[in-house]
Length: 580
Image 1 (cartoon, rainbow, N blue to C red):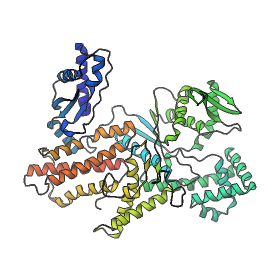
Image 2 (cartoon, rainbow, N blue to C red; image 1 turned 180 degrees about the vertical axis):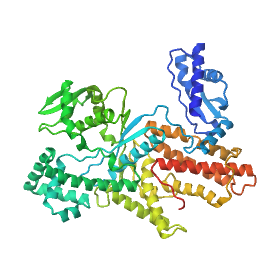
Image 3 (tube, one colour; image 1 turned 90 degrees about the vertical axis):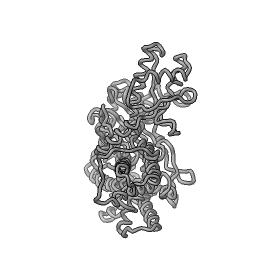
Image 4 (cartoon, helix red, strand yellow; image 1 turned 45 degrees about the vertical axis):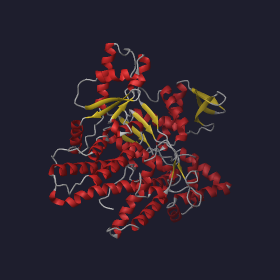
């Protein structure tokens, strides 16, 4: 409906330009919002206010002219002007019912498939394999996963890339420690990567002999030494298994096949340097090979370097990222490269994207976007830590989430068996951690608060999961009686109308999520949907409704609500439960 209304407004503006009411060369950005006060209509625009000054017109008079120029249509029931020149639109009930009917009869809820489908390469999670995944890896994994799910649902081809860190000097230290252990000890210690890393680091700091051996192994590894590669592959395999266990528990759709590690580009890095040299972009600075771009200046107005090769010949993240960008466009065929990486890396990606275009690592109108995100904070306002002050392993965080969820369920009266309670606790616990993150604006820091996320009140996963089971319970009680699914929708009560208006926004919200890479738009929509259903359920009898036509209509609204909640939560990577 939003797109149809935008088209009508575009036609109205075109007519006003043809009449000379608006300058023919005036650029027009048609923006529609949902009014906060629903009594004002379904959509609103400040178009007349924005165009009044360049058109040298009174805003209210221009608003009247815009309304007059809107072509005859069956979409709008009412159009009026508010305040200094806002235009409010009310959609006709016939249009609303047609939309509901199309959603109800569609397996995909009548969500449009993108007209111009793109190949989107999404870089997310990307942990360092030297250690186990920790709480700092949470946001990239689940935000990137939600956006990839929504993008696929909208008809885009999504290629996931897990750019894991598996190369570099720290791996010499880890290989030296593996070498020092016998097979049985190595296998035991590798079961806890965090302990393994700390033990290796301690040996590195305390023993010069061990440190020298670690440095030797780095050189051998990077030279392709067979013995070092064997040790390295053992370590990487264990590390990736740890990661996959976490992904599976989180319900993130990354697999081993999506891993494209730093080491995969190792053979291409000399070619990156040579290409930059041929383009005349390299400058030697204190023995290192650098690129200086005029677009990036420091405090003293000096160009900031992009170091692509260290004095000793080693490569850096910038070199690998340039190789990866070229691979993602020219081999994978990416039209849009999306990077879900900590906001603190924004300068790095700005530089890399600019250099990639300037040097020709990417060509054409490919889109390159870094979607930064804030930090997970503790209640003390500092980055979230474990009770002992260390970095919290993600696996431990999920264990605690499940334990707390089970305690919460056990406090409630329930007919669930012990096994069912454990299964529900798994879903509720992990979903609570995910939803608490996804429901926050991606660009903001947020406070990690167990008490807030594990409650059945407010915008939380337990609230939405319970809302779904509540809707579904209507159909359990209905049993095999069924209802007439071909019945007409009746929207006489204001609560029915409010629920219907929220349901038909689903398509619009998914497009917003994909365009802005902001999953919290979908979270807010689902929370509002659950709230409107609750108001509808309390005010409008369903199973006890004696009027058969009204009963069928309300059952259709309930079924559609359940379907949208289920699909919406699935796109966030959250499974629904049949009962809680």
